Length: 130
Image 1 (cartoon, one colour):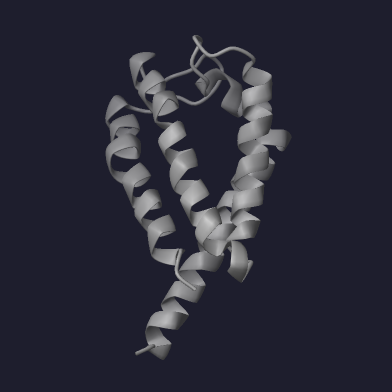
Image 2: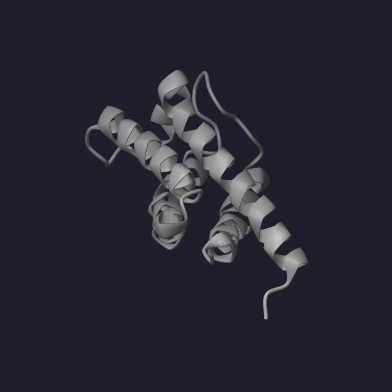
């Protein structure tokens, strides 16, 4: 049985996640200098990786808003977040600080990887339903 309150919560959560990913994706184009140092050195073509990540985030964020695409978009977000794990690990390995860029205490980088990242995955899982 559908519950109006549950549907409202899922609707709000879905729209917030869609906006979060679409805006984060656009930010890859507005501020690429923020993302490029977070791409591990061992990966080739960091500029292309940044563009592909930005496009994927925008497409998946918008996909959450389109009912027939919603489940695919949510699974895509989960896959994308899993693909970003090496970047989070790399950030921890380099001391949670990039020259002229993002610098946080190491515990913040760990919280981001071990708490925030799984919460985002759970959020995408939650909003996947129609």
